[in-house]
Structures are given as structure tokens and as C-alpha cells.
Length: 78
Image (cartoon, rainbow, N blue to C red; front, side, top):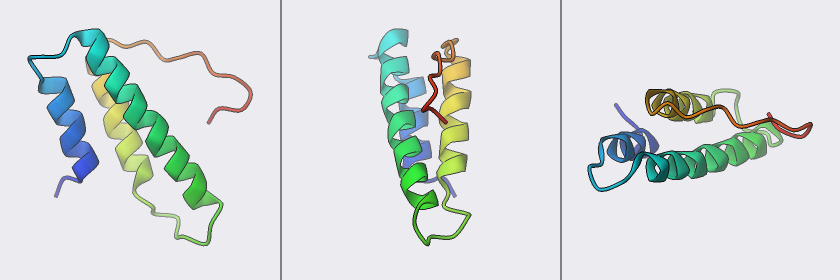
């Protein structure tokens, strides 16, 4: 069963009304949010299987499909 986030990623990728750059920008926002939630979950007493890793993988696959380049990572990034 697909999560809401996975359905949103698919909706963005398949959108005919968004440009490729707009799709990438929206996917980057979802990726950033999911990373933040993953970080928060890792710092709490929540279980290891928080589901954010799967969401991040789906976003990354969608970004790759759109030909988006991996952003440069700084010292504080995951």
C-alpha cells in the first residue's frame, strides 16, 4: 500500500502542468521535510523502522528519473 507521500511523489512526477524544474523543486521540498522528520525520529525513542527511509528512497528515485543532480553536501548534511 502506497503512503500519502509516495502518492504525492508520483503525482508530481506525472504532472503535465509542472515544468521539470518545478517538479524537482517540489520533490526537494518533500525530501527536505522527510530528512528532518527522519532526524527527529532518530533522536527520539521511536522505533528504527520509522518509514522515512522508504519515503526518501522514493523521492530520490523520482529525482533521478527527472535527471536532477545530487545537491552538494555540507558537513552537517545526512
